[in-house]
Image 1: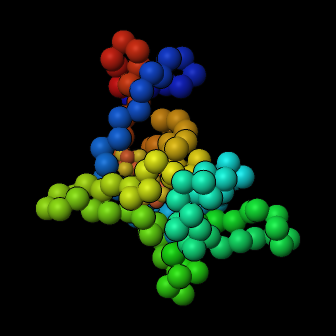
Image 2: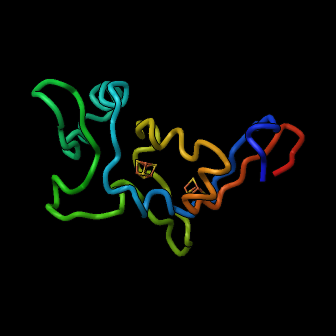
Length: 125
Ligand code: SF4
Ligand code: SF4
């Protein structure tokens, strides 16, 4: 595993284990950029947004709770690949920033149980 302090991390290899989308993904905080992207490219996803703050504040989280009424740790947009213990994101192109940045470091990956690998420019993991 790479050391983010001493190594130059060139790439992160996701194994598509789905853990980050199945656990702790019941509420995904949105930033302004996420909301603008959804409005422009995937307005159908906005029905999954629970708006927060003052009216018009454009703050919110992505969750299935507002649609189903049920609390869950699972993101509504994760999809299992047929016959495999692997998962895809159904809104990959417009996924929120919190997903784009995960995991933020090898320590973050280890702490949260991510199975992916950080690869340095010389190919080390
Ligand atoms: S939006 Fe996509 S990447 Fe983010 S938690 Fe949901 S399925 Fe995973
Ligand atoms: S937990 Fe890590 S390896 Fe698994 S799907 Fe998420 S980013 Fe990929």
